[in-house]
Amino acid sequence: MATTRIRVKQILQSPLPPLNQGPSKTSSSALHRLRYVGSLGPWPNFQNQVEAAYNAQTFSRSTTSPVSPGPHQVEPDIVSVGDEHGLQGRFQQAIGQVLGVALEAQGINLSFGDFKCSGIIYENIPDVIGLSRTIQGNDKLSLIGELKVPDAYHTPKGLRGLLGQPLLYMRDLGSAYGFLSTYEETIFLYQTQLANGQWHVEYSPVVWSTDIYEPSQGPGSIPSVSMRQCMFYVAGLASQHGPVSNQTPASQWVVWG
Image (cartoon, rainbow, N blue to C red; front, side, top):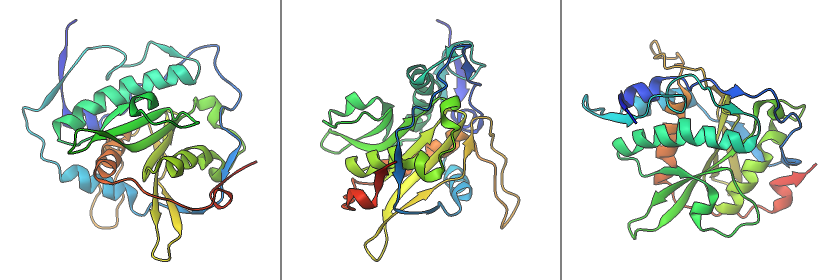
């Protein structure tokens, strides 16, 4: 199959290919009836941090990614998605595969995969994980993602209801970083322990698949950043962060209902 060369900077700055939903698709919510009840607040200066990390990268003019032309890379989607399984495949093509090339090119120790790749025994199955290779040659879980089809995502549940499932997984599996995504909309998550010992979650603004990079215009301004730039930034943080041990009682973290 023929390939084209796509520069890493172009990969990161570009919007995602549009998601083509089939005529018959999931309409009932796939969100578990879980609600996050712990400490929660916005991720401060998220877009500016993403831009700063991006600008700190050294991109070789010769660094390009060999990709196959077609819907799963940088062109409009012609493959229909109707349920969460289809969305997982689409995500791994447009983000896991393409962004994975950029991460490798920039020396960031994280690759995307499905939960079975981790070898971890757990009663639940996160949709997407990021694995980092340790010095000993073992894979460690660094990032957890949960995917929902767009129609199922737009429910009357508040933010705490939307975040319950991924934050449960992050706590149980010791991952400091995670995200919730419909492909079209993504929220990034970070759990951290405050000085008083309490565990706290920060959430990013919603990042749209159509967002492209538009630099900030001086002090105090906020840039527009693409979804891949954001994932690149969070993947870099996650790859350098060790496992966390959040011992918050379950009743004070995520509850049913």
